[in-house]
Amino acid sequence: MPPSDGSTLDGTEGAREDPIAGIERNGQSVVVALAGELDLYNAHVVRDALLECCTEAPERLVVDLSAVKFIDSTALGVLVEARTRMANRRAFLLAAPGLETRRALEVSGLARHFSVHDSLDEALSSPL
Image (tube, helix red, strand yellow):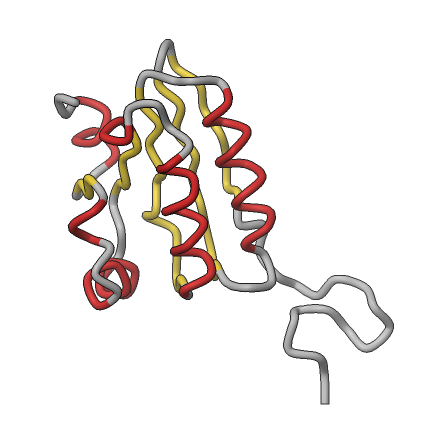
């Protein structure tokens, strides 16, 4: 039976998608696009990317969740941690979560702590 962490029996990485689909800096806004399954096995990659962006002190940090297929409690915790690193926590925005991701945010009770927008454009143009 193969390991459940996405690696193969010989220790090489399996076909897991990189959770960071891209980071775009546009003026005072930073957009971090996440993708695939966000879980215990890649949460550290997401954490490193988000915290690095937080250190840049952007006016607005938008996490694009449109390509996320699954998110577990570890990855949700990373979003909470990153939000707490922002001087203005209202400037940490979530954009375009799919049905499963939105459900995870709502069931966990975290939806009320984040500014969640239906689209990336909406998140980028919303008042802080």
